[in-house]
Image (cartoon, rainbow, N blue to C red):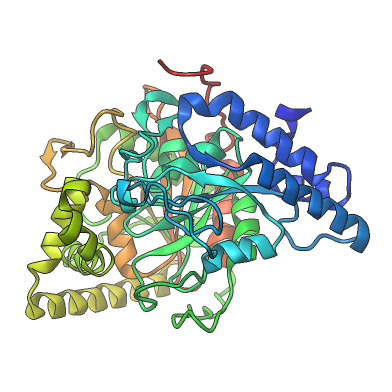
Length: 469
């Protein structure tokens, strides 16, 4: 029953455990067998704690028998936590040789919420060094392979999470997103990745709890499964000073979606544009009114790259200054960019962000969502550290090719990546939907309607070999 069980949705798995048709131990064991069979060729789950996980699953089974009800909505469901996030007693490396043997003594707040909801932590998912860049590789564990083609990138920085979910090694997983780290790997692996509004998922402790660029959110095979994980993680907390608003009720009538092929004039590879072409028809089939729009997102790139550089100095400046030789070049570059900033440039970035936020609020007064590409490229070769050119346009840094995501980040609005289509070479392409600030519920409803009509939704990657030489 193992393979049949692990491919069932997280919502169904939770119902099976809650009704005691399947025990938490059986569910965790089935996923551990799957991990053992696949992960030597994929390298998605880099630290595994099977004995600890099975012991916790057994505790949850006893608790369910005693109480007659699950301890929470995720009772017995296995999850592996992104290796940027602290897990008490489980190695957390951040993909860096500086932390290769680090074992935290306390959980991040998000992990505590997972445990309180009944999830069973089975290990950690791979991430690029310090989560920097949308390609999952590091010198501690190596690269994570795309299950659709093992010689291609899985995206990042939540690449390990997306691969584990796409191949049913996990029912869902957490991820984080600054410039696309939930959305890009979801697009590359044909799964769902939701970037919530800042403050929707509390986490911490954080050096800058007021940071609105980086957020936590779910990766899942279906919209319903992503919503289940979000429901367990979302909420207010006294250590989270940012809280998203409650959007006003929308007027009756069909949903109105703004469509942009290039999100404000970005270069997009023709194979991606071709694969996305069906997305407009799918939205119309789902009952939406779709209208082409021209976006004025001037200043978004400057604002994002300046604010990102500030965050890199705050988070990683000390590591780079003290151990430059042990930190990858792109992280060093990003920190140096931050150290070069003047007060005038920082102030300008803040103003540009404010203007873009206002323009996005105006757009979402007229439309229920914005639709466009998640990624400007299809999954690229595994041995390329970053994309040097998009549709003939040179990229000057390792973050420029991610602007289809990072421009959305600057708006602070929630966004979701959904399976939309495939290139002629059989590589996945995702559609990005951006909703109203605080409007995750409405965005997930639209995403579910799209999913029901999308032929790409639910398609499984081929089974990989037991190991890659």
